[in-house]
Image 1: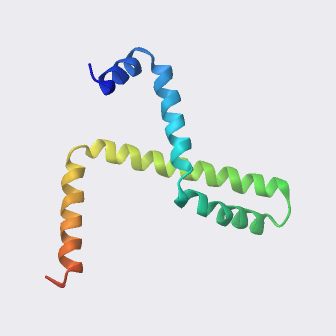
Image 2: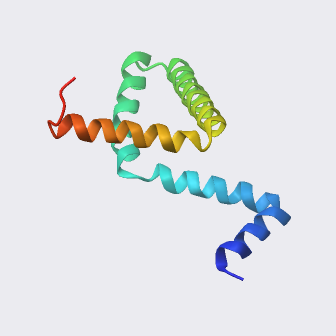
Image 3: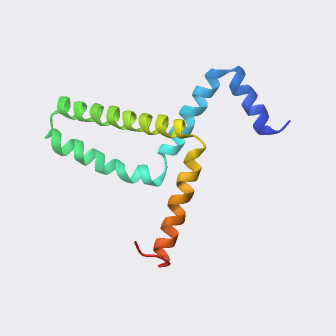
Amino acid sequence: MAWSETLGQVMQTRPILAYGASYLGGVIATASPCILASIPLVIGFVGGYAEGRKQQAFFYSVTFVVGLALVMSILGAMFGQVGVYWYFVVAVFFAGAYIFFQGIRAW
């Protein structure tokens, strides 16, 4: 039995571990350089529009978090429904981009 099969069985028999693993994966993904570089931008945006008022800054922060969670949930559900066809769409997109950037064909 491979390691991935054992992990899959544990996740199926103990769903609380699946939630914990998903949360930990999200925390690790948040520590990427792309996300860390945007933290000062978000703080500056919220602080700039709040003008020193804590209640207004809290409102902007909650709005940002809810909006981001909503957009990511919608995108995840949308791409989850597309399923295996998504691979074909991505392949066609990158093939077209390759052809365009190599100068083989200019649209």
